[in-house]
Length: 293
Ligand code: PAF
Image (cartoon, rainbow, N blue to C red; front, side, top):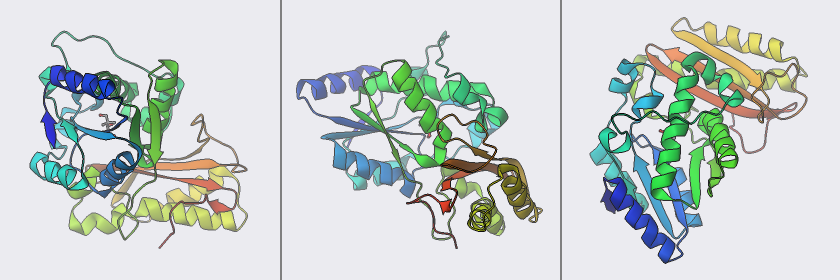
């Protein structure tokens, strides 16, 4: 695997890919790789002539210095995972390479960032994500880029950005990968203490609870949310950031589940913030969504 640290070299490789007319799949990451990331790499390897991954812990998308400092960094192990998966190139720039000391340009997607995580993490979070993803797209020049459904709002915002700013990139959103017990894979999971592991499962289990209510005929979003909140808060070690039921297209709250709807939530387990979501229909989980334990 070719490891590239500078934008100039990444651009040179992008030019070479274009000269060869090679399709380029791109998987942007912040490292601390897990099976969820590997599923994106596999999909990219299937779809494209060349696969590029990036590892860059992007400072502009963290609101708190502490969260940025604590973000797991496992570069050597990540390289082994990427190598084993068959990734062709890793782009791993330093912060000084990506951000000019006087940088002042940001990319913001307006309404979609005003819901769900945008409320608790603030607009700046998604501005940081959009800005860095735009910069990475400009460096890598991908044909397709791969994102996980676990960050459903991020994937939707990036899809919007790519359309609005005419990036010549196809965005591919891949299913959530879960641990055996149902916990959505996340780089943050490794920060959950063993004795809090069961508490981390309350969010996904509350989705199961809501699906049970849907199957019993409940359609009222607020009643479903109240049910999930009560279910989660029975565990006193969990704090709820939000539980919402929204349109999967606009992310606006729905009053009743009478079409495809996204149930999304964020909880705090100690100082670890976990997010998860599930697409439902009035009958329960949409096809291809999780089976509950
Ligand atoms: O999902 C992530 O890991 C990050 O938000 C991304 C897309 C790599 C941008 O920093």
